[in-house]
Length: 192
Ligand code: HEM
Ligand code: HEM
Image (cartoon, rainbow, N blue to C red; front, top):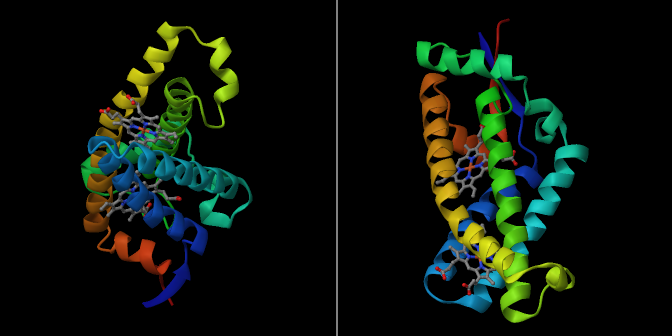
């Protein structure tokens, strides 16, 4: 048996991930400590990150593309069952459960960012969505504000499952997935 190193995560994916982690922590921290202006600047940066990742999901390298890691519900269910039986297949890119988790995080991020921009328009009369203000009743503006705040709870759940999934998959496949997200490389176990 020889171990061949394969480049799985390109620079865009790796930079996106670690900048996302950092920006998310900053967005959370600034929202809790009343640093409103900084919160919004971090929010703009998050919007840029999200835009780049969504684009990269279509035009990026193989393992970065959504088409390479969004699997059918049947395959995903089979994979989840295999996790519990202790013998899930090994994927070089995101596994089927991980792929849906990535999508869920990106959707949650989109909802939080769009609602953040609307809240910014309503409260401060500024930002890219200022134009939607006339179309909003007070009631819907407050609902969006509640939604924006509530998304933090959604993130805690998603991130807990995400990190637990990373740890579990690292243990089950005896490989360090965090290191792979830093270096970009994984080993493709290949029989000679
Ligand atoms: C992952 C990203 C984000 C998270 C986790 C987040 C979280 C939060 C939370 C928890 C609050 C409520 C703070 C409180 O208790 O008063 C808040 C408020 C706010 N956020 Fe965000 N936010 C994010 C992104 C954004 C973005 C992209 C914008 C757009 C510029 C934004 C604009 C605002 C505004 C204007 C408020 C103030 C609402 C108020 O004054 O009551 N946020 N955010
Ligand atoms: C200490 C905390 C974290 C660790 C150790 C971690 C680790 C990882 C690892 C190892 C992967 C690759 C998974 C795979 O091999 O399939 C990954 C992917 C991902 N993680 Fe995290 N993560 C952390 C926090 C977060 C947070 C806070 C977020 C979101 C706010 C996040 C969002 C994502 C996304 C979206 C991907 C997919 C990357 C892509 O394809 O672009 N992660 N994470």
